[in-house]
Image (cartoon, rainbow, N blue to C red; front, side, top):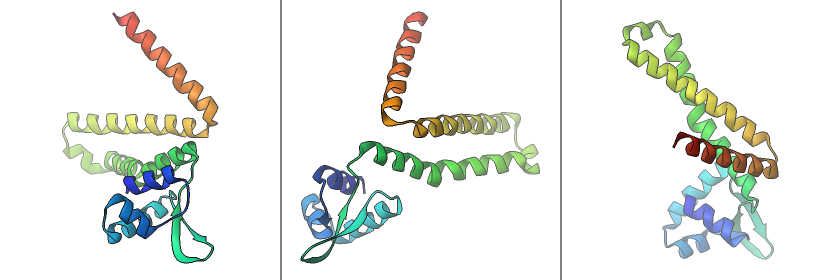
Length: 150
């Protein structure tokens, strides 16, 4: 799936599935499955090209838009269900059957993921130039912290 997305991004033009399969040397059925998955993530869309009856596929060429879609998709598919499961586990009377160490690990994991999602939400609300400055500042702070520990 990632190879197909990368190809669409790098070509920057609508591409038929047959060309994707040929270029990457993968089965047409695998291309079809991957394109459907990319569409479900909002990372690819079908476009029609004049005088060609085949479906063509393209992706955004805005790297920040793609980054945001991928982060949001991962969160929706992986992080949010994990948060729900951790919260449900802690709210369940069955948690008392677990060791204190296990309960503590569940709490720590929940706290970590909640902090991470809060941070992620803030980052995704920023404009790309503000985010780049923030990331650069974070790297400088991290470097300074490492030097002061030495």
